[in-house]
Length: 304
View 1: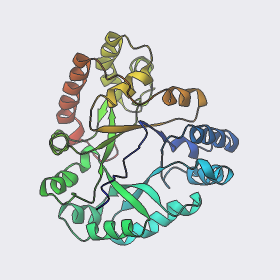
View 2 (view 1 turned 60 degrees about the horizontal axis):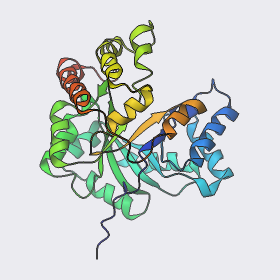
View 3 (view 1 turned 30 degrees about the vertical axis):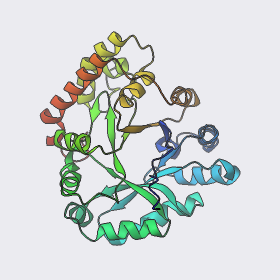
View 4 (view 1 turned 180 degrees about the vertical axis):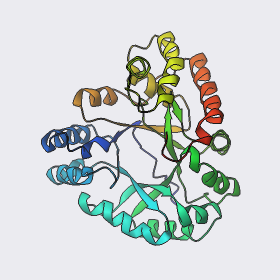
């Protein structure tokens, strides 16, 4: 009988994001310690060659405790099919690994066009799976890239090859366009949410000048803060995790930190966490839909 096991089976509801492990303003020893604490937890990790020397820090941690090497989501891509193998090797080599659980497909240029049109890339994706380099794939989505996966999903090209979609999904951001979001829900596609806490506590985003990376986040925090307060949930991290996991299709949320105290807040997330109250969830969904049409789909790449 065929093996119908998905590479998302057994995924942990919290995934440790390793972005800050590449921050050289933090000592190597501190970064290594955070990686080891996260490894001790048994959670999945999310990483990329784009995160400074995070791969080297992880490689050192993995070599020290090989029995605790986590399952991994790694960014791969970028602009054409011929880059895929080199990008995979570039990520795996510093980690000392032969393969990854999930490749996060970052689609640009010719590769994006090929993906949207059901092209040769799907054969290459399968070849990489057959070789054991990648067990499965999730497609990275931004507001300015949503039309590519939308076209492929509607045409049925992704079936049997793509295991889900990954994008910013938190109380202040939903980086799939309204049309793509509706298609994902209709087709019951698994989702991995990213940027769990939206860039920081909602009151800090709202009230501290310059705390929010972009002005739009400060404005959105003004609208979301009353919903957070109404919920009665004391901890913003818990609120955000419960938000993401309120959607049945969301399998996990990826949150990054370099501080062990913050990591412990994430690690408190367990299977079966309660969803947000229905009225609060629906209110945030309505905000997401409005924000997507007002700003997100009109944004220039990398401006959000």
